[in-house]
Image (cartoon, rainbow, N blue to C red; front, top):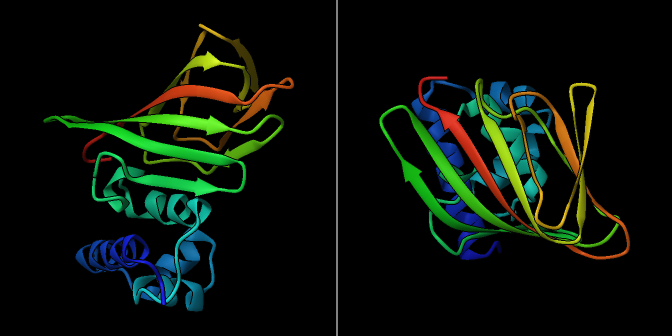
Length: 176
């Protein structure tokens, strides 16, 4: 049986899908995941991976935090990667999410395009990072900052021999 956080995320995915009038088949196809996997996620029989959450967030048009119920302290993790939601600010025109990232040295986090108009910013606290998006590459060292359009596929890699510690801010406009 899935854990309570996984079951809660699955229930949120189902509610958002139904709210948007999408069938299970349509969302699975748009997210590029199997219909059976999505069904198991929604029913709470499967814990979602970070890749799966990002995959469904885009087609649903919501920020990742919406699937985490915007709960401070919620953790989204995969092997060698952990994002802890520190804060969410929901304004009239956008939602901003602030995460503390911990990425093991050499690990690459690939992210599909977020909702239209989304922008990410990264402030490196320790280690180094290479950010790649839309044919661009930016290297950021401790104390540095990068910003990029997050409505295109992008990735960041913990560069060098040290683990990356960074603050990641994702701003998603409403109505995208």
